[in-house]
Length: 102
Image: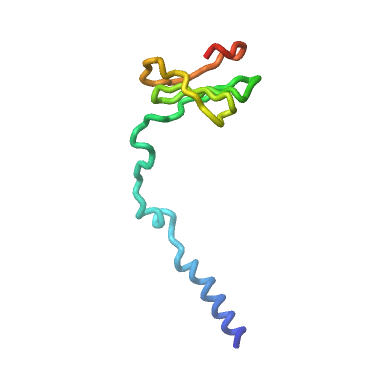
């Protein structure tokens, strides 16, 4: 009796996926595209730079006008551009031979 029950169960299990298969388009049809990103584009990180010889010193530029410096490989950050009136930072570069030139 248990062999017949197991066989019947196997036939049922094998036939369900074949009957229930749908195309990718059918599965995705109920979904609609929507924006899930930030509504305010401020705060984006635009660029990150460091020195070839010292990975612990890192500079980060943000789209909202901030330049940040870390001397702990990114564990902590200090703002270094607060005294300047810039609306946005598009890029940042460091002069590899001289760490004082950013």
